[in-house]
Amino acid sequence: MAFEFRLPDIGEGLTEAEIVEWLVEPGRQVALDQPLVRVETDKAVTDIPAPRAGVLLAQGGAEGAVIKVGEVLAVIGESGERLAARQAPAPIVGTIHEAEEVAPQDLHTGDVGSSPGEGARALPLVRKLAKELGVDVDSVQGTGHKGRITREDVEAAARSSDGGANLPAGSEERVRLSRLRRTIAENMTRSWREIPHVTTFGEAEATRLLALRRELSDRRGSPVPLEALFITSVLPALRAHPEFNASLDGEDLVLKRHYDIGIAVDTEEGLIVPVVRGAAEIDVLGLAAEVERLSKAARNRALGVEDGRGATFTITNIGAVGGAQGTPIIPYGTTAILSLGKAKEQPVARNGEVEIAVVMPLSLSYDHRVIDGALGRRFLATVIEHLEDPEAG
Image 1 (cartoon, rainbow, N blue to C red):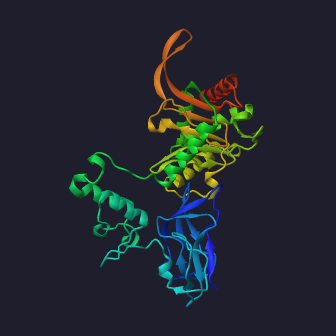
Image 2: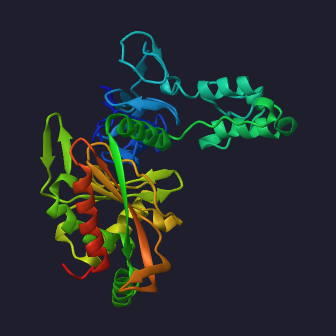
Image 3: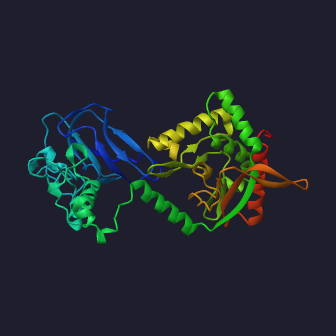
């Protein structure tokens, strides 16, 4: 009997996922736990395995379709089994009925509008865009899976036609935000709307920090990410001022006694924040290895479910892209975020004399509902103390 496989919740707060690529075609055999479909969630691209062996009778949506948690992702049955007609709207395969039967490929609702002779396909939204831009979708060469026409294909055709005259006034281009960028926008808007932000600034002399990094890198045989040293310098401040390693729950402030540090990673798709779990229990070289692992996974959109959620405090190294100071937005569900800028040589006054030192700019944003200005300055002072003397413990 045909089994409706519904999209599971594969991550905290997941409500939907976008189909990136089907790894099994309708009518093909699939084994238990065999990768069935690749989907993109808010945080990662992941393969979802088949929950049982059998034949893939139908796909719940085309590549590019969005499936909500609990909706049918695929239908798996026995060899020779056929599906009854469905009544649910596109792009989801609905309840299997006992009425009129259709072939499995007819249930792949995204595969509509094949062009004559080539079998190229376009989703309804892509065809709508083509119409708006005056592009003959059937004349477009698809670059998607099996020749499917993508939004990018249509936009490229519009730009090349008459020197881009099909785009508004020839000087504008409408590009849909990626799923990750839309998620970032939603999260940032919510944080900015609901959290009263205060940002305080400071500077730390980074001479000893950078010397320690060189020493550790020589010992390790490869560069130690600065984020590993930032984490070790922040932990004493989090222990001394637990309000910064906390979350606000109604009228209660939940102080966390575990230290799961988010590290902002700049990727081609946008900013992703993987989490170093149990950071206080890991030595600096262990932190270096974990930062490298998470950063690589983030850039490859291959983070595990647990790798991308539950940060208790966040560090963002804007110095890695040449940044100095800014006003970082607090991740929702936490109370603070620390931004570290690029260390540069500059004159400093010391014992009545002007000297040249390597100085790192800092920006600390915190939730003013639970942290006032004096506490913010004390926290930042503790961080600066340990950045300037990273081996103090």
